[in-house]
Image 1: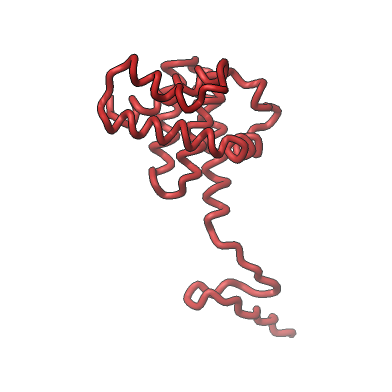
Image 2: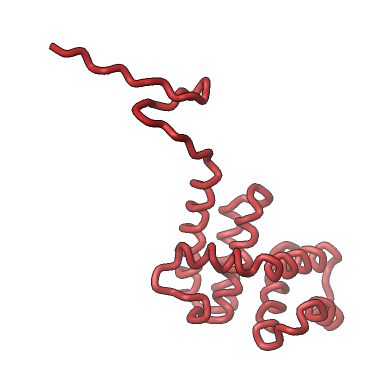
Length: 164
């Protein structure tokens, strides 16, 4: 198992703990690593994940909610919602990690810590989020009565068909 996977799993365990004791966010990461062994890279990456998720939790939850039909965050299983938060945070870090890797890692973690059904749920939510993020990354263009000129980036007026 790679260092990043270990870091993600460690971050998941810390986030799970914080669901029951949210006041100790800063100490939770340090306390976790005092009890466990791990490579410096693993510790650093898990710390970055947890702190980033806590700092952007509202934004991350809103992103998850925007693609989850009929599911509110509190209604999701604690493990599942924190797996989604981990992966959503990484997806929102545009370009740092390939989306396919982020989603695959989340699915594998869901299989290990939750259930096969959860893995399917996580896959569906994250794929929809990936598509939404990808669509927003493409510059929006206002093209009225024209088509996009790929070379110039400017709209060209459409020719009217010749009348017979």
